[in-house]
Amino acid sequence: MSVDKDLETKVRKTSEKISENMHIVANEPSLAFFRIQEHVRKVLPLIVDRRSEVVQLQQDLQGHCYDMEYAIGAIKSIEASEQSFQNIHELLKNAIFLKQQLKYEETRRTKKEPSNSSVYKRLSAHITLELPDLPDISGVVRETTNRVENMMSHARNSSSSAAVPTNGATELQRSHTTLH
Image (cartoon, rainbow, N blue to C red):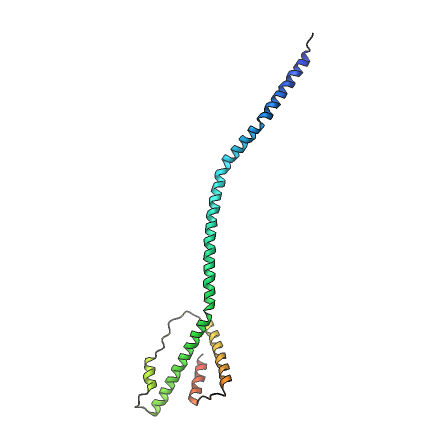
């Protein structure tokens, strides 16, 4: 029997190729797992660092949200205090007006009775009007003054039939409105 050298070479090459392919197929999952493990080792520390940064940013953001909620609540409470400030402003205007009335009555009585000390004089000696230095709120004061004057004129118009002020009181009211 004669062995065909060409056939033997072809059979040997084919069996080597098959053996090599079987070896590659058998080891392919190991190679894939090695590549995955290599990738995880490289990327995992970066992912952990990013996760800790995200957690820190989330805590900071939550703190800022609480601060914003607190600030919104404070602003709403300031808006709710507008009526109180208007009441205070109106009471101050009324106090100034009454002080002017007392001064007017005092000057009127001192002209009539120079030696007599009046109750108004004693009362006005104890009343002093010291307003603290306020920041420039002229726009707010103008607006509030206009509102108060409108309310006062509306009240005067609605109660004009009830009481008619004397000439001195009328002059004081005119001077009071011209001051503002």
